[in-house]
View (tube, one colour):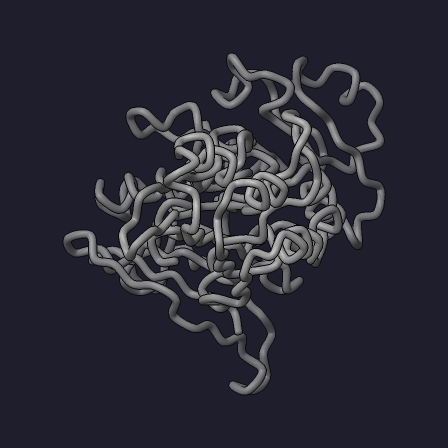
Length: 355
């Protein structure tokens, strides 16, 4: 199953609206086949694997899958569960049930009716952690939200004059681009575009095409076409969320961009996340400044934060990564647990998740 998760990991950020799934075929205690979900989400991992195997190889083999096989039919007219049931595979190990109502429990039922031995809940916790974006989307109607920050050793994101290039080193920045490629959407705000002229693309060689959907919160429609993000963009690659009633601004805003209007300012952020969930954005990455990140954290809409902590000390006059939370007691503070640590020369990568 660990090998199946490795296959799924290789598909992260490439599968579109579908979950990234990996599977491994074992026979006589040897791995004889492996596959993952194809770019764009089709074919599924199980279909890819079965198409590579002969009838002899499939007969009496064991299949390990990171997620319950689908029960709904694809463009080939059959489901993955049906393909497995007719393949000759004798037993299937599954990490997690699929919360998609088209499949949930039904995929396993198809296998049981075919007399295949089923072993569900195999490395369940790892499966939940790995599929957390997909599960959050299905069960909570919002993406799994990650904030990415490059900070100094003393927790500042920039000097007092807003200069921030470069707090982190090149290894950290490259890994940050890998995180972009593994995300379904990347969100920023008007202020960040104005200050940094951000492109929000993955700029690692070979992964440029896996740049995530670009999302800008431009409440008052203040941006103009001079910024890099608007050049050579396509409508399906960039969404602007706003709450402006100015018809002239709406009419004269940039072409080939989808404008989404929400007039409920109190629930503006929640509505954005709900809309992104409906678009099947599973993992959302936020790269923005202190004000917006603080707003998201105070609204309890952030699941985890990626810190790239450098070896630089900026001092108390630097810009903090979060604003005042108006806490009165230490017990009121927000707690985060460490999920992962990595070292990039003198930089430290910290992945911390809210409890």
